[in-house]
Amino acid sequence: MDEQVVWPPVVGVALESETDLPGASVIPVILSGGIGSRLWPLSRELYPKQFLDLTGCGRTLLQTTAERLAGGGLAAPIIVCNHEHRFLVAEQLRASTLGAPDILLEPVGRNTAPAVAVAALRAIRRDPQAVLVVLPADHIIRDAQALHAAIAAGVTKAAENFLVTFGIVPSAAETGFGYIQAGEPLADTDGAWRVRRFVEKPDQDTAQTYIAAGDYYWNSGMFVFRASRYLEELKQFAPDILEACEAAMGGAQEDLDFLRLGAEAFDCCRADSIDYAVMEHTADAVVIPFAGGWNDLGSWSALLTETECDQVGNALIGDVMLHESENCYVRAEGRLVALVGVRDHIVVETSDAVLIASREAVQSVKELVEILRRQNRPELGSHRRVHRPWGSYEEIAAAERFQVKRIIVHPGKSLSLQMHHHRAEHWVVVQGTGRVTRGEDSYLISEDKSTYIPLGTVHRLENCGVIPLELVEVQTGSYLGEDDIVRYQDNYGRC
Image (cartoon, rainbow, N blue to C red; front, side, top):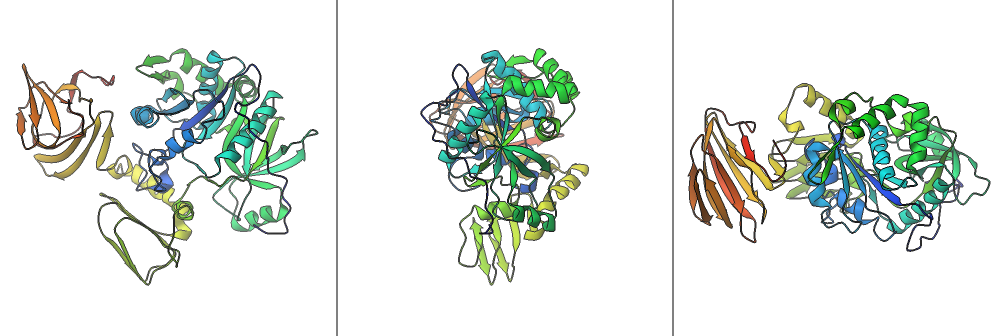
């Protein structure tokens, strides 16, 4: 950052053991509906970046988002996610210190304005005076104490009926972010400024002028406001969105530990962001500057800045070998990746795809993902290792009439009671002990043992041990698609 620029002060309000807003719950709303397309091929539609440990800390982005909120006297969170991700969210937040999350399932993604609207409607049922702290699930914030201080200041302003956003103090003329221009300070300012305007992602020259001006911030996508106040403004500026969300909540159904939004109503909802639907129009938008080590991990270059590098600027993850190469991010998920004479590139290897991109072009990965979508490529949706609520499976080999998979079942978990019309299965246990249901028979199967499931036979596999059950499954038949499953009973509510 240019040293002669004088920034408005960053909020530094001390946070007590509980956020101070008498008579109101302060409820985190964690938005977990994105797919992280700019981090393809690691981030996929069915297993996006918020569920990955991208920084090597041993915790996923979703988990660290929840963990950094602990200790601030906040209520149990509301999570808004795609219905395909429900079991990932539940499992990753199972031990959350914030309390059991309230998980709302979107049938389709409709951007942040509808997602926050349904969260606000849900929060008001808990507490009509509830204040929401809206956070994306896939950001990094290195200074949790600074975040708590910003939340405390935001809650104070929310109590005065302002709609607060956090503006990130910029460290460079970044073209990958939108910007917020601060206007006049509030009369009783404690680091809060009225929003003059929101601006789109700029080109490089425009971004340089923003940095030089000293009153522009990166748009963080984080907000604090009363749930009722947000809904009031949404009713004024985007009444169609509010109407659709109210209908979706009215038609919502409990499903195990989840709340499924009414699909027909939510499908009809217009997609829009909070910025476009509300914040750009309201007269009460306030920005609080924030400098807490924030990174939205919106590209491979952004991830490079969060990864330890060698003396010549290379970030190396996995089995990587470099010679005369510098300023590269290289990630090997399953095999040796070797680079010679390569500079300023991103190289990411997974089991079914390899990305090679110039660091200057990483924002265009999203356009590549759109090409994959138009071509209906399977590499867009999932990895070869597919996660299920009971564990995971991974394709090892496949041909016209056979397929080999590695299956892992977590302790205490079981697959559905099911049948296949077009395939038979042969299971060989590598580790652990399982109980097999095959027709009228039920028996144990352990390491180095095998069993055969004929085509058309009702069957189930359970892990009745204390360690993961690992087996190799050989499928044979005329059709081997995952949709050849007839479920008779399922612990996870799948049809």
